[in-house]
Length: 186
Image (cartoon, rainbow, N blue to C red; front, side, top):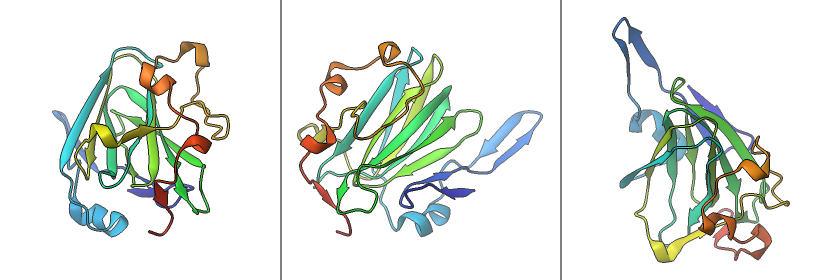
């Protein structure tokens, strides 16, 4: 099942599960099903993050060209609130965000294209998130936007004092301080 979100370039994909007494089987990725929505993509790397505590926030991250990345994100243990922020200057949705709850039990996945900052917060202890990316990680091209930027208005569903952050994420710049790395339509 494919569900477009309020920013149409981002969508949630929930693959069909075939269940029986043993458990279930699912095709977690199918180029034939996703390519009509994403265009042709070459997924080059799979990433996996594990978070012990609920309230762990990772984000809002992106890589700048020429190492910009599309992402296909899913939660394989626990549940997370996944967020994508449009950072494409000139976009009718610039500075707006969409969010989706991704759960291991439901199998939902969120597609986050280039030109979006991405992050998630864990909703329970012991969460594992895996995601495909369309470009390799490059430290010199790694950037972020502050998770609690007032201009973004993201409701992470948790009091800020309970959020577990890295020092890097806590010090990320506001969106207004971020150069125009991405332009809508290019």
